Length: 86
Image 1 (tube, rainbow, N blue to C red):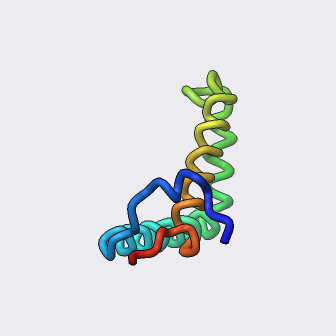
Image 2: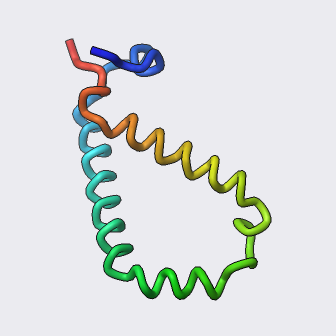
């Protein structure tokens, strides 16, 4: 099995960790569904806010931070990546 080296260094996931991951995934799924349902309003709001705020001044940093967050979320939410309990 191809596991990341960092995950091999972590202790086995406890039942509480599985609950946290499952709950977090559920919340993210609901937020994704809401974003899809409200897409037109969100796009309109984003266009109205163009050029304002922190993200417009630090676009590269925001992109890297978002990518890192998504990468970590995907890595730690994949059940095969969870260390097994002996």
